Image 1 (cartoon, one colour):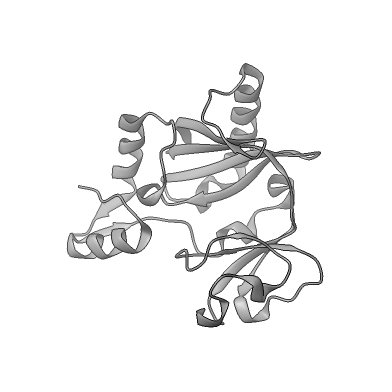
Image 2: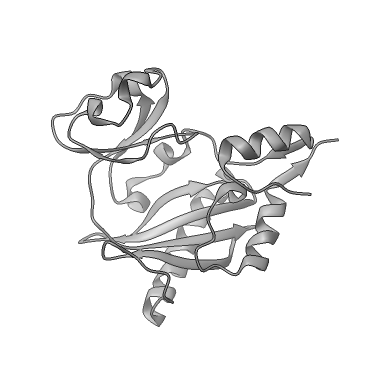
Length: 198
């Protein structure tokens, strides 16, 4: 049994079905070494975000606002209605040349798809060298961080201009879009991300 859908919806249905939905710890991205993120990432409460330059800001859990680059934290749409104690990630602004989604099970990429290239939506297959570099980077990353993740997870990786391959973020498999991933294989990962409670 499994549930798949938007995060809040999925968690409500999972509770009714007596399922535990696995996901990384809320602060997980902030513990990853800059060797793998290629950018400085901080974790804390929205009320404590102070910056002089544009900053990328995203929710650490439910998507209460759309992630993006903000000149001022108060530029977030609906800022006045947000809980100031909600937790967020902030990072320096970088330019992504390529972004790739990977459905991962037991430390292995089961299916993957590009979804963004040079500022446009793009699910075309990776070039051969890109695929080789992705898998090599993934393997180095998992050697260090596999034990910090659920066995079924979605990891996004990409290429930052001037810096190379980097981890973008981790997402729960049960609420991640497929893009051009193999749907049947992705479903295997989604099922394993939902644990039936005794």
